[in-house]
Length: 61
Image (tube, rainbow, N blue to C red; front, side, top):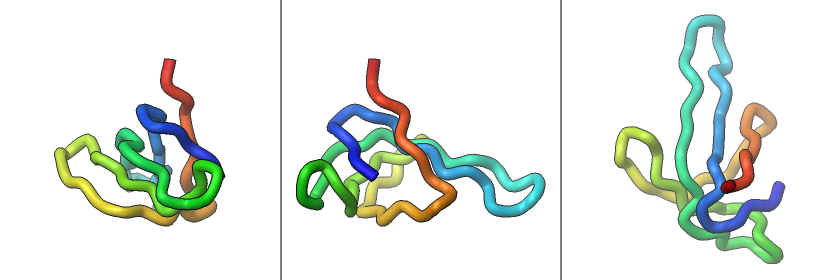
């Protein structure tokens, strides 16, 4: 998975009824835009994140 600054990171809920989590990629710390990503989540929290199979990137416009 590769991301650029400003891309959206979306993590789908893993259980029925659990909400998806969305955030903005602030920095990619891995080689060639790979994880871990510094993410600002929609609730304002920030942190490093290693995406799993339930995550995908939506490119910035």
